[in-house]
Image 1 (cartoon, protein in one colour):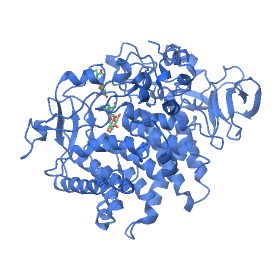
Image 2: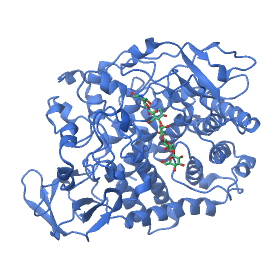
Image 3: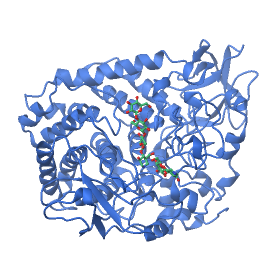
Image 4: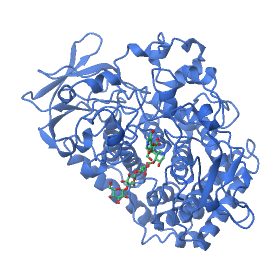
Length: 602
Ligand code: G3I
Ligand code: 9MR
């Protein structure tokens, strides 16, 4: 269905939605080249295209395009409006990228800093998509990626003023939720009713999971802690906008308020998830709500520790907003401590999916990293050295964060706050942990034909978030450069390459964020996008991305275009393994887009 209802959007919302230059200019985004069309095109056509970051580059940033290797040695930048060549450069050497088994060359035009709209031209190939060079090029993306969380809120109607064509009735109030047998205790018995409202739907499904909420809210709060000027002022267009809190924090609070209800007040334990017994049908949230009671399931150690960690971060951040949310900071610190204490008493309550529950499990049998992360955040929040020791710094390594491996979040928080830690903290170790991983990522990127730190094993479920979380680590190393000048640009360049990859400089030739870029997913595995009768998907969501596992293959009516890891992507609703959206994937998009988009305004 076409829609031309965008006149109802406020100017603020239009500016913030970002998807949406097209909306603002007449409201027919269906006229844009569609992702569906691109996926129907033969793979060879995609393989012969020059790939760029489809939303562009900031003037001082690293700027690269990827060119299918042929005989041409040179490339040009042409003015997208006039077609006139404005810049000529030499292509890099042809090299094979194993994840897509294709040979490419890099066109590096970092030296071109003049704002404008360009295409890359190489003899014998079609011109690239147009892209801009300009300050503020990522601002709509940052706002749009935050707005995606608003679009995924449980328990609230999305209004036409704020959500335009994506307005919808409220779903899942969750004010009547049952205690599942796996979660029963001496006080709260199986079948007892609790209220656990608000929160975000996790992904394309309608359930709410504490483990995944932990890393997600952390990443948003960390973005705010580290970029308070930029993100504190960003207007996103939310129901709470103008209430004296930054919009990013308003959005984070929607989920934090829910998380606090997931703690059992009697013992400090935290339920692993709030869920239906089975995944909902492909219907809108309000329709899905009619399908019956939801339950909270088993208290787990992972949930308690992830909760303790992120709620401790919340207690730090909301200390500055006592006026807007009186008592919240102190309440959070007490809740975080109680969850930590519960985890000490129950160190191996691994989540085990009960036989009558069939939704996502976020199961994780290895908990050293969760203990380390919670300890680190409680140390920063309280200044108590016992928490630093509990983190076991000498034994805690640094890895790229993911929902199941959160040790990196501990190191990034310590690095952020290193100037005000107690003498117990080993600052040199903190910096080394970040830098060593970032150096390895820089080297991995340099060794890659695409100049991106992604190899075959990175193409698993949610691969785009691997790229974005790697970029977040690199940007942390960049932040350390006050103490080690000279390396900043290498870290930042490597982070830029990863954002480029997600925004279109990839062998699929698509921006991986709905509504952003020339070609982007039109059929994400996102129930509202599929059920809402609006042709465009809900904007601002990064999809999971190429996934060699292809776990959804059997249920898909169309084949994947290739078995190769970096090409294992299907822009079809069936493809929950490559084309779903998820809150933990969008959060690093917010972080990376804000950090790289703030260039020149640091
Ligand atoms: O841990 C193993 C690792 O040892 C092994 O080397 C590797 C090989 O592929 O697999 C690893 O396990 C993977 C696991 O994620 C940990 O990353 C599994 O193969 C993979 O199937 C699993 O995917 C998870 C998926 O749920 C299925 O459980 C995704 O990470 C996770 O993001 C996704 O989350 C779902 C929720 O359950 C429900 N809501 C939607 C959400 C997004 O799709
Ligand atoms: O929609 C579900 C998605 O959120 C999950 O990530 C995915 C894997 O757990 O499962 C999806 O649900 C599918 C189910 O597993 C199998 N039948 C088809 C469902 C999609 O409609």
